[in-house]
Image (cartoon, rainbow, N blue to C red; front, side, top):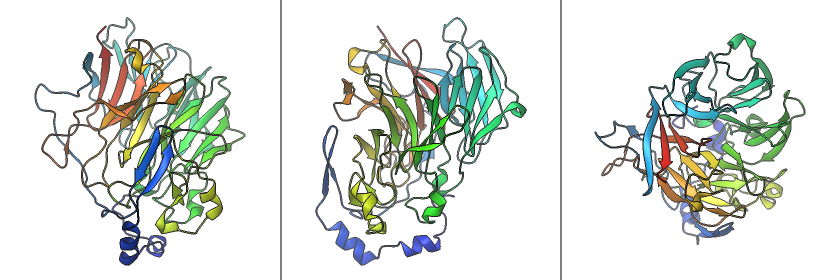
Amino acid sequence: MSFLACKTKEEKDMKVSDGEKEMISQKPADTVQTAIGPLILPKPYATESTVNVNKLVAWPEGTMPMAPEGFTVTKLADGFKNPRWTYIGPNGDMFVCEANTKGSAGLITLLRDSNADGTFEIRETFLDDLKQPLGMLIIGDYFYVANTDGLYKYPYKTGQMKLKPSEGEKIVNLPAGGYNHHWTRNIISNKAQDKIYISVGSSSNVGEYGMDEEIRRANILEVDLNGQNEKIYASGLRNPVGMDWNPANGELWTVVNERDELGDNLVPDYVTSVKEGAFYGWPYAYYGKIEDPRLKGKAPELVAKTLVPDVSVGPHTASLGLSFYNKNRFPAKYKNGMFVGQHGSWNRSVLSGYRVVFIPFENGKPTGEPEDFLTGFIAKNSETDVYGRPVAVTVTPSGDLLVNDDAGNTIWKVSYNK
């Protein structure tokens, strides 16, 4: 369901009056302690909620995304239909999921560069007839795909160039549909490769359709390789997408899209370590025990145990991609740090996101604010025009960074000039 959809009865029941909004907005700001220091958050409704939808335009001739000095940006491949996610198999094959909010192609494209010269000798449709796929995994003799409605596995042999849709087995049924198309289902395996973790976003903004619609949603689920023994690994995560393991200490980290319609600067998206059994606030609270005014007093026992996420990555940035940099090609400051792909805002008067940011880490802990890494996607002197929308950020075996621009149908490669 689109964010422009008509209000339901539940939404109307949750509505905060204009007078209440004015009273809330005039209260002092909230300050919370994150892993990198204090974060000052405005009160809800300090500014009006705004719809500011981007307009995609062509890159001006001779321009492309910009990276820091010493890095080179090249176009790895283009001509896709919404290439939202990339997965690199153990043999170096690249698998690109092509899908979007409206369904799009619903396929996985295989790219193979056998001699590692940067040019793909093979580009073929690897698997099609899919329903909004995103996450992919190869474990043993199986290729796993997370469609919006379920986790599927297919028999697979290393180097195989095509899978038959008819051979797929649905091993986990997942809830689909809902608010602003939180359709993406990412998957990641643990080091032992005996568990799969599945990110499932909410079906609503703040539970306005009733919490019965949120069963097994706004969670990271854990299952066995056959889909059995499911449990909720962590909850209260409104729309978690990118996931990765911290190379320094083995912690699971995720990036989360926070809620809308509280103003320009609420609520910031975040990246956080994921504690098993933990609750992160949605929909009742955010950044610890700050209650959402639309649900005030509804679940005090959950509000009381809400954890503060580790690092804010900005309000309404639609941060989706996440990868730790565990290679040695980039300068030392990037070692074991984190890259985040920000798809970009719609609920903000001034566009935010539309970039890739880097978060420095030391000894497994974040040490500083997110900093620009790949920028230039927002057109200068425009309030709406953008050239693309970064999503997945994938570290290659050779240490380059791939950035999926699903709106621009392009995969960019960022390399360091040693």
